Length: 81
Image 1: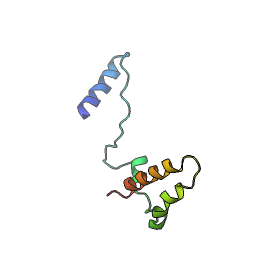
Image 2: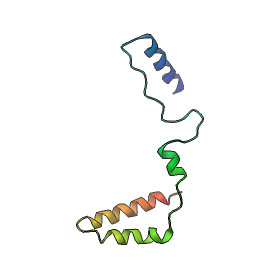
Image 3: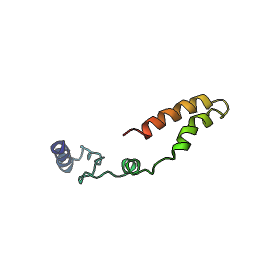
Image 4: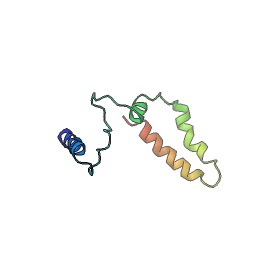
């Protein structure tokens, strides 16, 4: 993958009609940055709040059922190891 990226940069330097490649999403050092780093270093959620969250969402008028379903999905993703 690195060879293709470098070749794309080289071609963009030589030919004006070739655009530069998009910046890399991953850092070269391998450390996460941006949203991935924030998600990896997120603080632990209060377990009592996590248990009550879907129930509280049911009290939102009109869309409470959908919010409760979305909160259950979010909690599965959040507590997945």
